[in-house]
Length: 317
Image (cartoon, rainbow, N blue to C red; front, side):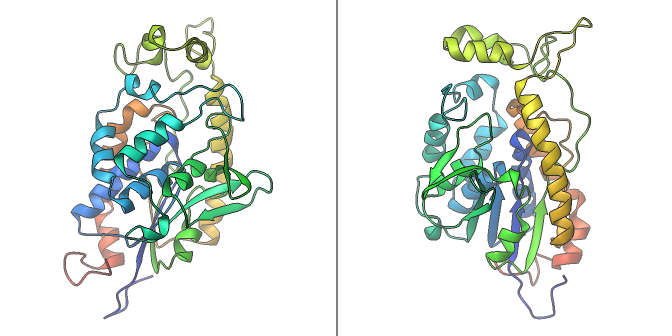
């Protein structure tokens, strides 16, 4: 959809699911800002919901600074293990940190329209959370099955929105967007490496979970010791628990994304090349951020063809 002469289209941004790969959304937003492109509507699924809410609400700059220097030592401190209730991590520490970055308030009071996508666990239906606490909305959207426990929200148990709508174009359109940029961080997947926390110490000496095990509670120590799976005879690592669970979810998400984008295509899809970043390699956030930024720079001709010159007559902000 091209902008008609004299018209000012409402630009929407649909930020997709992708766990650690979702840090690329930070670079996407930074790149768009550098080009003078500012979406007025944002919808996000899972990690896309988390980044999108902070962007709309004003906590984005602090989050970007924190993520750019993220280490495994910081990550494991968010693992409040609770081996009951549908997930092994409670998530309260993470939510407390997000609230520190951006105080909780109602979504309808945010400066721009925003929606987080979650899944109704009982019915499998897509749920767009457009009202109420932004923290509660994000917590529901990131409730990855088997990892973060489900969230009760207005009488329903909700889980990760990536199960039904990994790249929320429809939600973005429903919020009033006339032009939609979609970001699919799972669109450049490479064959996944087995054992993301390998014995060779990839990712930096002392920064893999095994190096931090003595500092952790017993339950978490046991969890991380078994996470990567047992070594094979060749010295490599077989797929661990999370790799199997989320790998299966990722296959499903890929098929759903292809189908939904074909049936309701956005005006432009940005696909950061982050397929080599493991789904739980959050310590590689700086790489994902940089690739998100570079994706926007590579896509500048397409963005200008779609939007015109953002620094000139521009579009609605």
